[in-house]
Image (cartoon, rainbow, N blue to C red; front, side, top):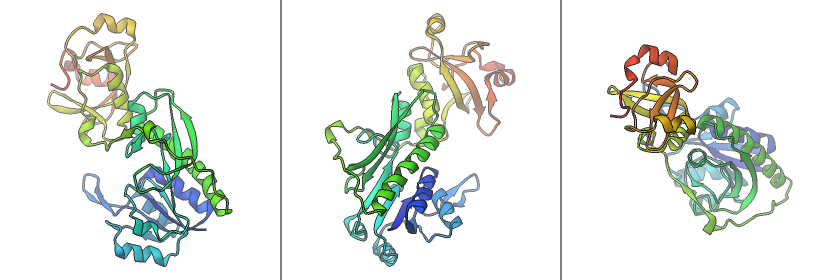
Length: 315
């Protein structure tokens, strides 16, 4: 069984490796090189780098136009396999694949249809998430479910840690589905229930700017969810301050210090870190970083910036 693999970020690389073990990867479809880093030099996607290192043909079109369709047709693929590619496939493109297409999505569909399901699971304080292999459908993330696995959440996962875990779990699930299809067997398909669907949106850079009138529990989730991008940030003396790790102050202590202005920094607590008042409760900062400087634990940061106590972050 010959496939065209479509994917772009690091999340998709384990799925490409799984596809290589299960079947013949005729070519890889990924996003064009984009400017990256301080120098804004063109950089290849993680999937492109992985594909080239394995000697695979790589297509990097801006649009899936007639020229791309002709290129893909020349590879004679049987199946389209998608993992975080990010584009909708038109009927004319899907007609290239006699076996249709399958897509790996890092959530328990129909929950969190959309582009940021991993971030959404952390922001939502979910007790579990998971991975789903679905049929590619005309509407985003609405295809019939071929396989699904759950992943329990402890409540301390960051975006980068959860992405890595779901990438590996998803690749294993995708491999099993591809092995079934390669053997000529059709997995049982389950139609998604649209009335149970929830959605997540594209995350932008401004989403990382914290608003201290929000509850401490919400801010703590944002700090974890926006790691590694766009990072949770606030302002301190006019400079951008990145918040890398935190926890919600214990209720028994929070009630004693919570009254005051949201964003106000309180004296350091040896056991819990650097407390900051919020709209509801207190957030204890454990690790911080002024932009373009080194990350520091709260003690080292306080030693170098003692004036932070009593100031109002974000002002």
